[in-house]
Length: 83
Length: 420
Image (tube, rainbow over all chains, first blue to last red):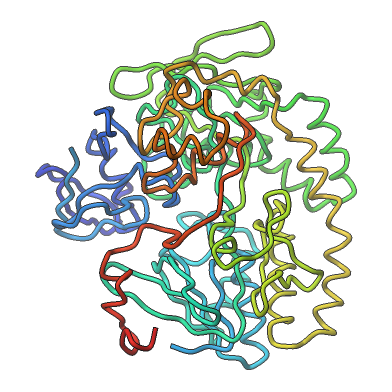
């Protein structure tokens, strides 16, 4: 992460992650080393389209499920959950 | 909320349309599901081209009401669309509606394409612009279309190691297309600018046949004719050019020809008071989208003379649209990429082997749940059209998954549900 930029602190599955305010939640999940969802047969999945149409990036954010993380920017104190 | 003109989609076409209508003194709303204006092609996070800066500045200084992060999901009656953001739902009433819903990438299934860190080509670019670190990462960019070079150049500028660029189209067709662009020096310079630094990595008539990895992609096997080789990579961006977003137009009942929204020369669709501009009318790129947006913006407010003048300019650009389509037409061999157990529908995990015995999209949908997940066939519908020649059937509301409360007409931030 470039120095001197504002930093946002959030958690992904309880693990602290620092990101710039321009970072999407989808990118933060990948930075944290995770994936975004488990498919109906249990495969790990991560974003495909990056533009909100494939729904592979769905995560829980602050207790709300099915949030398309590639369309949402990181915010301070955000609680992101993935399988 | 009531407007003279409602524009759906804040890419180049939608920005041009809304700014143009607002200049004529009309009350205009521009509704978009993204957080920033520019659509997919003018994604922020990077210095934008000059015409992008110009148009986005024009939007900012205009009277257009730009509604961000709002997903349009229904058109319950003529003159009104419904959109939601989080738990809020809003009814937007229009005298004229301009659809500028853009395009998405075509994704074709191949073994391993569902692994994490396999993205679309534009998808990987969008993720990088959204903060995914690519510096030092080994990246393969694959698929087809002029976008591949732009993506590779952009990722390289961010420090990615471009391992290979695989363009499925043969060299001779791309050269013929480039030759045509010589007649439009601006476009050619654009292409050269994109590709110069990474051009030595390009392979033509080449595509990925399988991606491998345990929890994410680690390597990809590429094929060019009879030659096949495997490279290590951290990210694969693979997209087979663009398919138009026509779902909302279909829901409204606009006539679709060969997969695109049919319009007259003033961007009027077959439905009264509904216009369409940009990629949904034909994949033509930014300049085409801008001119169509302006034509629609003028036509919507009755500035017909001015609109016709621009329509004459647009007509001269149509050759580019068909040249683009011919140059990057898909190799039929790509239909054989998916194996028996390769997932085609990622939402419902439906494999190729379970689909190919069906006669049509509707049949497959009912028997296998293909296309029944939250993406509503936006990924697998286009893929099965190429793989099996299926055409997706009619669109029903909601065109995007919506909250039950929104569907029930509750949570209206403007007026109440009886207004809907």
